[in-house]
Length: 438
Image 1 (cartoon, rainbow, N blue to C red):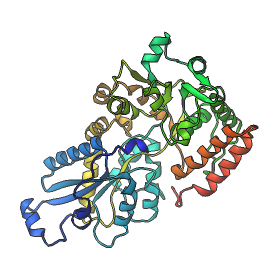
Image 2 (cartoon, rainbow, N blue to C red):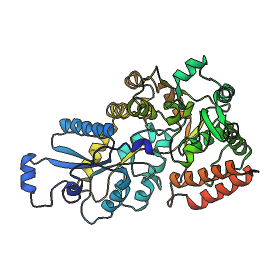
Image 3 (cartoon, one colour):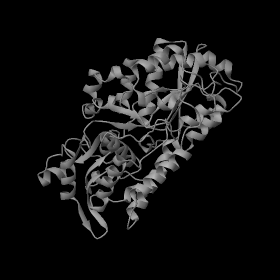
Image 4 (cartoon, helix red, strand yellow):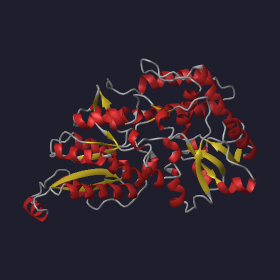
């Protein structure tokens, strides 16, 4: 999502990479000079999107790999996210050797997997994934019972919220610990002037948080939106009740549609002293300290979202992972790097550097991670309770769901059940993946 789209300068070698950087050896006539300079080493080209901390972490992993495997050099090339998807697609369909390793967002992966342009994960690593990786992290990378990508993170947009500590302290309030306390506090602190909500209470109405909180509320109530045939059904008693609950936050003036319609995040209100609480993934902590130059523990904090239902449950998309193209000139060597990257002792360092949640079960009690990431450690306890969101193009799914919510909010006499039924049918017919997972 946009959490991954922090912009930095475009790599100066972007254009040249299409000719030289895609393969392991140059096709520009300078092969002898390059191999001599590298001592006949094999260059593995690693593509990623622009994100300064992430690019730095990828380069450090490449250097670490080269230290243990001196026959290889890993060259990291980063590109703007808005062209990244098309660039990958072009490389995968090229008749010449493309990049050896590609970092890919789970939402992008289906089109690449469907094209049969990816190398299958080797059996030994696949067995390790089945044993140690949590189910939501694997979902999108699975096709006909085989894996075509390796997760780097557990993507989670539910479970935590940014709170404005200054506002809470000034009001003499404690952070809510139950859903009832959350709604009571939200109503008490929010301020509305006509149709304008001048101070937000608890917010979860933006393009990421809305559907993730909604699905969690259904599951925590003992319901299920994903049917046995993988169709969607939101129009259940649990689904209707959860939607009415979220709609009431807008009706009662605790939140509004501004962030959803403007494609912005609710946490911006909290950081700008315009809101008390906003549900968001832990990645938003960095936005507060870096973009807003706020102090964690003084200006804001990250705390659990009080549970809505009786049991902890939520749905998660598959996040960032690594794929290896079939047309790589160094498929076997590329998988050696991916295996190295995926080793728990290496992966946890990458997760820390990139403020990610670990995808491996064996890292849930990692002392190294907990010591380095104390502000999000509470999320590790709930990760095993998550389910995969389902075999859907989730970006398209969000578009339909969010528009339904906007229409309900703007309707004088909203038909909640009817809207949920229509959205369910539309998502089921238009957004399912075009290949079997089993």
